[in-house]
Length: 272
Image (cartoon, rainbow, N blue to C red; front, side):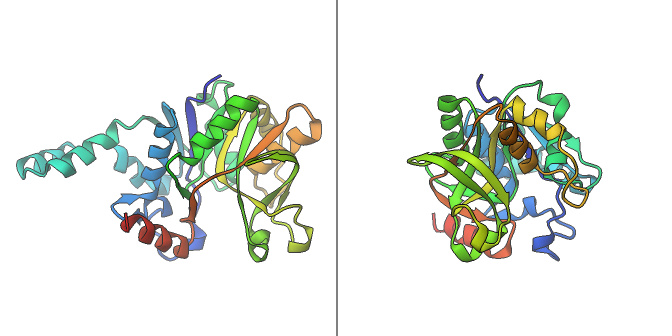
């Protein structure tokens, strides 16, 4: 089955970028002249995604406004002969079919994904979180979809992480690796450096099958009342009902959920 839908869980509080994200969602921070969220939507569309379910909070209505039609602005740009800007604005409303659902309380990334259940219809979906931008000729999501189409399993995006930073990541333990593709034996959430099973840290891009979604629904709130996506993967591996693969994505990755990563992304994209 082709991947035609993507869920973007962007309801989080953005505590790593405070105070900048107190009033402006971190997903709306600019990289040159486009907000982070637009890069993610464009990545999804370039990979063949036709429908995007965006999980937001009531404090993030500005995200909806960004992709909504603005006839007054279009008319003004047209009157001023600002053709380039007019085309860019009109493009936004036609990028993809975007549906918005609300996560009314911060109960974890897994709970945010479950909020989109009524739009998923028991099919494999892509998941893109708002912190990871990968600059590469072939998008990170397209790379994951290639692995899914070959393996017919859920796929987790990973990147090699320096030893001193590994405790900030979920980490996979591979059974076997074939180039950039790894069959996953287990996952560990933010291990101590000495306990990390590999140097392959998980970043915020996934393909999940209905099996993982089902196990996510059955997951208990084991992280201070939160439901985490990683719980769905762990349960699937424990039950041995379906294999899971990971893909070391090619390209330059920026963690835009941190100020340093956002600055680095702006420097990189501005240079182009």
